[in-house]
Figure: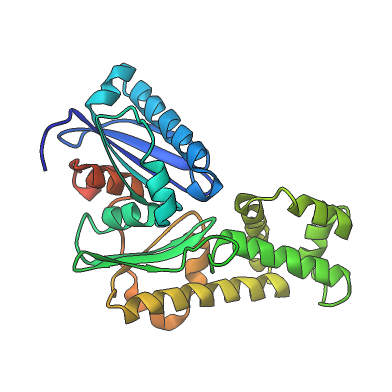
Length: 298
């Protein structure tokens, strides 16, 4: 670690939103900012623009001039950056920082959760999902290959399953429930309207319907309970896959994790540990910055 820079910026970019945090060289919090999706699978240029916007907002929140970006080391963790082609494309960017380190959102989340330790893992359950960990400093990735092929146990997949179930229930293939009725009501009980909606729907749009599944599961709706139980089983399977690879301390992270934790299967609870810092601070560690003790701000 060096003090070559005056400021250290950490950015965590996901499929629904992104967050940035600026710290001084001694770890003091200076400013924070938030923005929209920065998943490189949605476009590398869009991700770069989002990072640039968040960085400038964080500098502004700190009361610093934009010229301070040249005195800043930025650590950036984005969904999609475990794909080598996306990582190479992102690095072609003529960024505004003094230095830049990039990695996946899972990697910076893991660094934060385990305070930069060389061993430990995370289970991200948000719009997308991913199991990730470090074994003696070597990375292990389980899942997280995008909405189309992967992202089991994610809010987006729960939402998609709910829509599939609802349209099938309207067709008389599956039983109806209060939840399926509510979903189809939102589409005016029209299969065609739902099909047209899917033409422009993103994972984040599907993820919005996961909130409805949680709401109706709390009311013991049979379809919602089935979908939440399935999600819990999928998350548990990912955690077992991490444990099989030698990762036995796993922190749950992500916007949907709290909703899924009660649905995890009993045997994986022994793997759960509390995280020390969040992904933004993990990105600051990636940039070479310092952090305060976990109890100070998180």
